[in-house]
Length: 354
Ligand code: IPM
Ligand code: MN
View 1: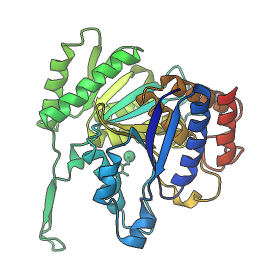
View 2: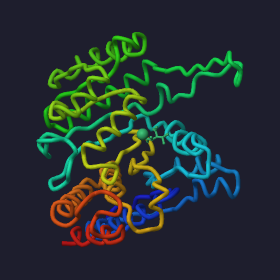
View 3: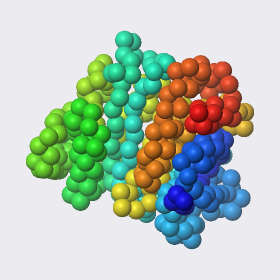
């Protein structure tokens, strides 16, 4: 008998439930094949619940979420809810309260997938961003004075703690070592302007680097990082950066790997409960039409398996996705795949079972 893993599922808003359904279909095929069990418990969280009850993330659910082996998330964000409420009170609160201090986002171009970058292919586009996930500008520090007057003052501070920075950097070094590709870690920051925050990052980076003499290190400013991601993405192996810069560069990353249809991420607490998600959002205009691409959610499922020690299952899913995009799926964009959301899920299941 294989192991039993308890998974909290948050389908969420918009196309979230559709892509999560395909992800679960694939996960079930893999667990059946390898003989382990995934037990799911679904949570109704998101815009609909908020509009119905006024609740975003009740404390009792947050407490329950801490008991699982992992959380599988679809998307949070509703067109009828003012931006910021659901994001802050569900997504960010879960990241913070479960101390998921790493946001791990692979940027990998699969064979057969179109990238907007001229003359670049799977050989050149294959790196991972380690984004700090609990501090920086996201910490919510700051305030407003004289709101609505012409003297209004808005302050939004970036919080960087030695502990938070160091644990993120340490994770990145460990990850670079384990990944074992170019064994190179790039710190992405802005030491020339953000002289307090990124001085802490830079000092910590080079201090921790001494413990990893086998890992090459380099520092690149965030603006130059954007430039190189487009011009020479092959220079990157693993990038470590703060929360805000990580948010921005991973959207750029998603585009060069073929779009939001395939970009996944993990909110990782290496000693606690981690949460895995497609990074594309709720895509309201595609909801319920069977046109959204479920591959990002399916790959998020693979990432989840890796982190609950079912690496073999993760590899099976990744290979199936690779085969599907190379041989069958026309485009990764919603509505242009040459098949529907459910059919993509079925195809991956078919390849998993082969
Ligand atoms: C992401 C998203 C979130 C973020 C939003 C929805 C709060 O853009 O996961 O990258 O900024 O972290
Ligand atoms: Mn983002």
